[in-house]
Length: 356
Image (cartoon, rainbow, N blue to C red; front, side, top):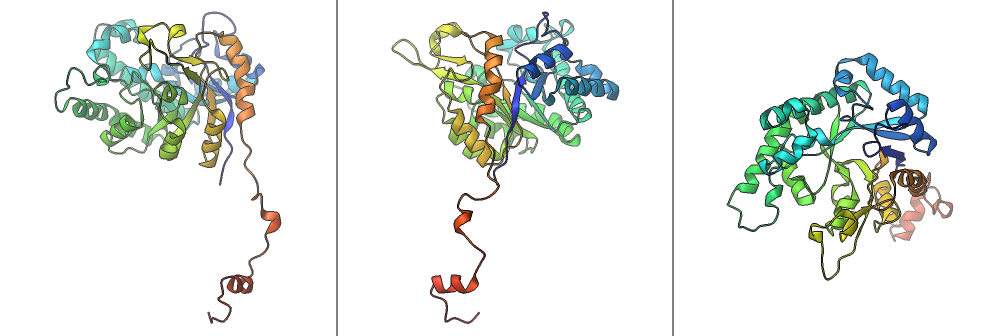
């Protein structure tokens, strides 16, 4: 039976700053609630809003966090470890760029950075359990992504070994999550080794088909790849445990297409947009997710190169609210039905003369 999606909720990562009301959990959750949001996805990597190290060791701190959110009128949907998950697997081509996500004591030391990232992601499992959460969201990181395009020709075994190594790194983490009753919804995202359905299947296989390696569904990334994001739900609905509601548009022309010519976001053929300003068929998405029984949160992830974050957030709550579907309590044609009548059934099938 269809179930109702929860929402609206908002991912706080794009809004945290040093300015009020975005500089503390108390003020930003109040801001979100005033806009109509009922849930918040907390970035575990933003110390202004959440102390992951403390949360992993302190029941009292986790109770305080839950209390702050409850007082504001919102629930915690998930903890995000996107930035730490990214650092679990980093191809050397990205060492300098991704050092920006690491603390100073780990910079210029890939092994130390990876160990820190693994520890962080594992702490998020403990913190999630303490907060009463069964779902978290993250990235897989990337070892193979620099070799996305098959030119120059890739040596045999390169991609296979990359995914085997990705599995070796993530399986102990996933076991750690399973022990605590928490799953990870990996965001299927270009820049990660897991960026579409095929690569997700490769990753799950490399983890031994781990039942905690699930999906944070974000259709914007599929639209920019020109994938069928509705068919994706048909294929993987039983693995979707989180949902980022993010819009995008793709407008190819004679100058650029999917790769968008190294242009800035505002000048790209494919770009993210605020909800309702892009091309994603959210009516179809909410219908399919409801049909398949998805009953977790619809979480706004705002990223737009044209509209301000404040306007995007203000418009996002009513947009999500308008797409939530209340499942029927009975079949629409029940009025024309009746109680089961064995005699009538037999007569309609021409079985009236048969003995049981």
